[in-house]
Length: 307
Image 1 (cartoon, one colour):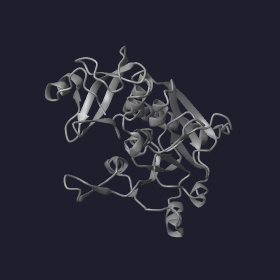
Image 2 (image 1 turned 180 degrees about the horizontal axis):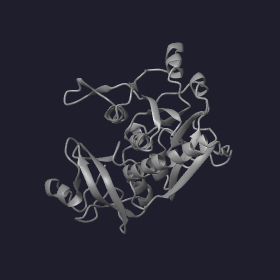
Image 3 (image 1 turned 135 degrees about the vertical axis):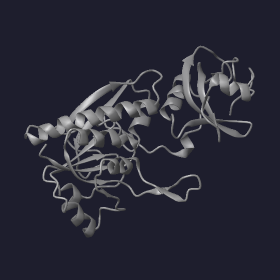
Image 4 (image 1 turned 45 degrees about the horizontal axis):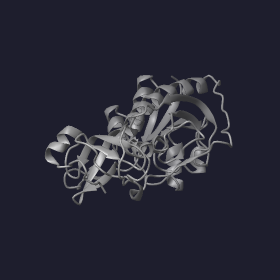
């Protein structure tokens, strides 16, 4: 491959794309990622991002600037002499001088079918909204929030019980496979770009802590979508004996009763309309476990109310 690239990404979602570009033989001039954060058992050790760990495994140069807005950062970016940048959940805003520094542009893998779910949490929001499908879009970046022209896209169905974690992994793989196709067309001068339509625009706001608690008074479908849309992180939760319990997996099931009532010995919980069965739970400070294992150590009898 003759294209010289800069790769910009941070979380696990970004790693398959970096690995695929390396496997395809692209020259990666530099890898940009967020700065290490405190972690470890006592929070004292600096933990590199998943992208940094992967990049160092490939013996690629890694940079972790805290901003790209300074003249010094922009000059260092230009000095790599790259043709294009691949951006996958990087986490820093790319200012106009950075976007314009690449002769062929900066190309982003976005985890939705744009223009639906622009913004920070497209995977979670798609499932929480009950969407039947999602996908990835390869977009040439501009100064707007996920508003750039679209190059390629791929649609993926969302199963009735699919969690955000499962969709995350599927979209990560899909984007990793799609980006080399876009770059190949770009190198041949054959990459078509389509402006995003003005209709169908939605925004995937960042998940806030105050929306993660389960509201049993809502219809069962909404409760189920809420649970799976927040699984495994940050996790939808309820309180039991003053202790927070995350629900990581559920399914819709027949049942009725007062909202939040345990209806049987299989953790079927009544909602505002219908019921859900809780399949996997995690008590605060404990490991995740299947419902039957959870019930062995936690008494949740028929008729109990969850808050």
